[in-house]
Length: 94
Image (cartoon, rainbow, N blue to C red; front, side):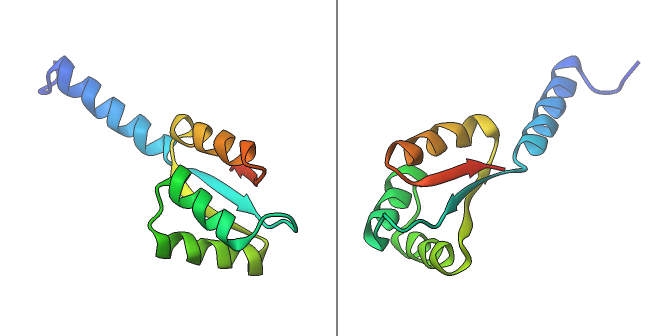
């Protein structure tokens, strides 16, 4: 018999599953259409970045071609990815 209660075991399993799910990355790609200001605004509104973080990510996107802008579970990142796509940005979850 385990020294941990059933509830404690379930909580540990939930925590482990959450850790495994956080290995996803929301990646935004550079394009020739959207302005720096629009991308910054989008990252602030959708990904809840602060202005400095959004500006830094936008520069990385521009100069490197892409940037991982948010990490987390697929279920957390999917609505953000869809919202970025709806705004005309190129984004994927890796």
